[in-house]
Amino acid sequence: MDIIRRRLPARLMIVLLSALMPVVLFAQDEAVDAEKPKTMSMAVPDLRDEQVPLKAQRGDFVVVPIPISSPTFGTGLVAAGAYFYGQTEEQKKVQPASLTGLGGAYTDNESWAAAVAQQSYWDGNRWRLTAVAGFVDFSLTLATPDLPSGETEVAWGIVGALFQATISRRLGDSRWYGGVIARYLAMDQDIDSTLSDLNFDLGETLYVAGLGLVAEFDRRNRPFNSQSGIYFKADAMFSTTSGDRDGSYQGYGADFRSYRSISDSVVLAWQIKGCSRSGNAPLWNACFINLRGFSITEYIGRHSAMGQAELRWNFHKRWGAAAFAGWGWAGNSFAEQGDDQNTPSYGVGGRFMVLPSQGINIRVDLAWSEDDEAIHLSVAEAF
Image (cartoon, rainbow, N blue to C red; front, side, top):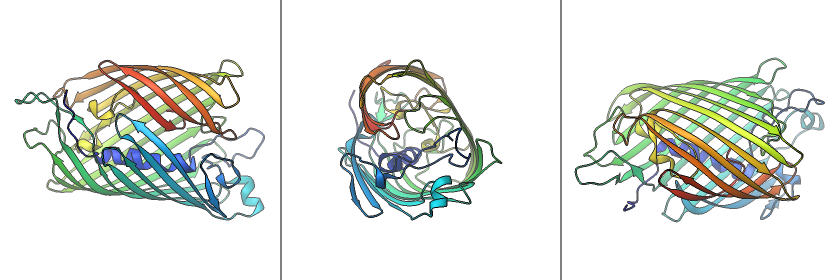
């Protein structure tokens, strides 16, 4: 199968820009210690006092470069930095430090992205603000319906900008947070003109404005490489489009994760995730199967569901291994012209812990799917 170079769809741009900050800031949700006040949910580790390989630091500014590799983005480098704002001693006890981050990524297919992010915490961590703005020019492969030419992949190009902000509040003294999401995207899309819409908007120029709601519950012992607890997130987005075509669409998502310690060194983790799109949704904001072993652009639909489980073994202070398996389904698939698609995913991997205080690993996974295999190199566990 010939691989044709193409650019990243804007739905995937959101995925990549969201990944830029955890690579260097390790900014994910953190559960509350039962012995501490219930105010540290969603904490961001402060890297100023951590010994991280390759870290460059000057005062409150920290920079970390990390190599990446995946069948979706190719092989390249992510480099990002963060400025941590000062805190009083009282603030340090109940909330993480606010920060401003910058990130960039470049891969071997001449794809690149740049982003700036802000994470702010106030009122004893009752309120949180996360905002990201970025620009991308990416190249990927896109699986398509059968064409008269016999091609199974066509060129798909996206160049565009994104802004997204989420503000949320802790609900009483619980582990729940509720919030509002605002999003704006301006995209120029280039896709083979012989393709029909197949229930997706394939317009060349689209401007998308969206507003949504999000709810999160977190009872994990730590945000990365969790050893116990559960995590749940649900969101609903309502968007309007303008440009080549005017319209509207809705997006819904849910994500549940569970972690259980089988022994002091072995953890069983599993995840169930679902997605749905209705209305005149752009192709780049469709539902994807985000498993290992293939590019996520191979399975695109108006609906998707996936589940995966992973057995993690920390056999040394900093070294570990993992075995995983999963299954994904895409409904009203783009490549199958409205039919359903499904695929298995399984593999093994190695781990090296770069930030022991938070359990953050660099991971290398070798994964197989129904018709493909892939190597993944990244920071932090897959879920």
